[in-house]
Image (cartoon, rainbow, N blue to C red; front, side, top):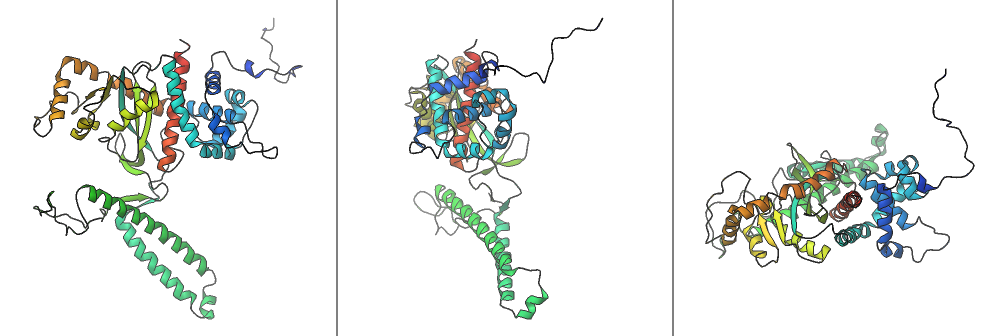
Length: 441
C-alpha cells in the first residue's frame, strides 16, 4: 500500500488571492513594529513631501520606516541586502505591502531622514514608560566600542603624512617640468597622460594636507586644554605662568609621529578593541532602566574615554523620559572628582566604582578629593555594594544584544552626526524587539 502524504502541489494556482495578514503567525515581531509605528507621530517624515504632486509620488513614509526598523531589529543593515530581502523575506513583504523600493531608494530615505529616525527613539522610550516597562528606579550606564565604517589601510600616520607631502610636491614639480618639455619628449613617453597624473597627485596631496591639518588642530586643542600655549618654548608652567621643571617633547600643536588620521571617516578615532588590537571606532554609551532593560539613552562620541560623559547621560535620561532616575550606577571608567562635584546636588543617587571589582582601593586624600572619599564610603557599605552588583546585568546585557543578537558591530554610515543617529536607530530597534517579547508575556 502506497504511503499517504498531505497534499503537496507547488504549481497549484489559487482562485482567490491570499490576505497579507495570513502570511505570518499572530504575535509576530513585524506586526508589533507595524502597530507601534502607526501609533507614533510621523509628521516630520511627511513634512518633506508636503509640496509634492502627482508627478512625484514617493513611497509612503510609514512603510519605509517600518521596513528600516524591522531590518535593523533582525540584523539587516545594508540597503542592498534589504532590497533583496523585500522579495525573499515574508515579514518584510507584509510590512512593505508588496512595495519593492530599490536599494538606492532605501539608502536615500535613511540618509534624508536620519534626524527623524533618531527622534523616534525618544517616542518609543516614552511609550515604554507608559506601558510600565520604564520606571526610573535604577538606571545603569555603560560604554561600548563600535567599529567605524573606515578602513585601517586607508589611513596615515603624521610622520608618514609629512614625508608623503614632500614626495608628492616633488612629483608634481617633476610632472610640470615634463609638461613644459618639447614635443619630441612627449613622443618618447606616449603612454603617460601628464595632466591626469598631475591631477591625481594634486588630489592626493590635498587629501593628505587636509588630514595633517586636522591632526594639528586636534593637537592644539589638546595642548591648550593641558594649559600649554604657542609661546611656551616647550617649558611646562604653573597656573601663575611661572616655568616648572622638565620640558615638553614636542612643540605646541605638533602631534606625535604615530598619530593617525583616517581618510574614509575623519571623525572616527583609533580605539582599543576587546581581545587586543586597535580599530577606527566610536564610543557608544547607553543608559538602561532596571525594570525591563529598556535603553532610555543612546549617545555616542569619538572620545575613547568615559570620564566626562556621566553628567550628559544623566541629563539625557530626564530629557528623554521627563524625570530623574532615583539611582544611577556606573563603572570605574566614569569616575572623576570633577564629575562627582558636578552631580553632588543631583536628585539621583550616584554609585560609581572607583576601581576594578575585587581589588582594594588605595588611600584617597580627603582634602583634595572629598567627593571621591564620600563615594568610597558609600561603596564600602552593604547597601552600596548590593546596589552596584546590579550594574552588570542591567546594562551590559543590552550592549551584548546589540552586537550578538542584532549583529550590529560596525556602522554603515560615516561622520559623527550620522553615526549618532544610526546608533539611536539601532537602540530603537532593540527596544521594540524587547518590548514585543515582554508585552506578549
